[in-house]
Length: 148
Image 1: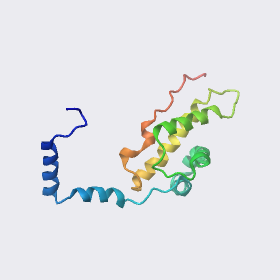
Image 2: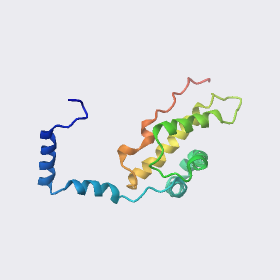
Image 3: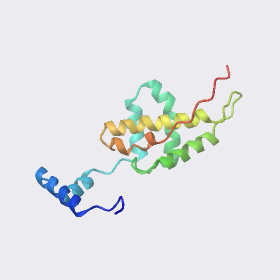
Image 4: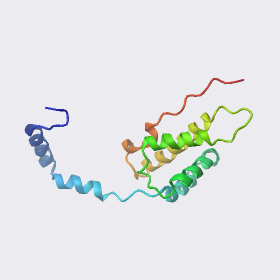
């Protein structure tokens, strides 16, 4: 028996448990579809920007603009952790080169932090479940030692 195969006894136990709770299998399927579709990034970024402090808005605003450029019409529940990593790499590759540049590491780190802020608010607003937050599944790049 493989890990994905469910035994007859396990199915019977699940049905019994659901029956005792007064829940039918159809109730479980309907509960998933009752949730309204998640808003698009274009719809939700202004909501978050209005809810955060001025400092947070200044720190993350340019990264939210980049998210809107790339994913504006996508729903919040669509991007995967891999796509977030790809966008972070894009931000890293297209960073403004300065004399003290560190190869775009901070740009990638800040983009991920901006998305974490956005998704944290979406979880708090009940738009997505905490376990469905793709930004938490992406590691921030490690910081290099200071040059000072």
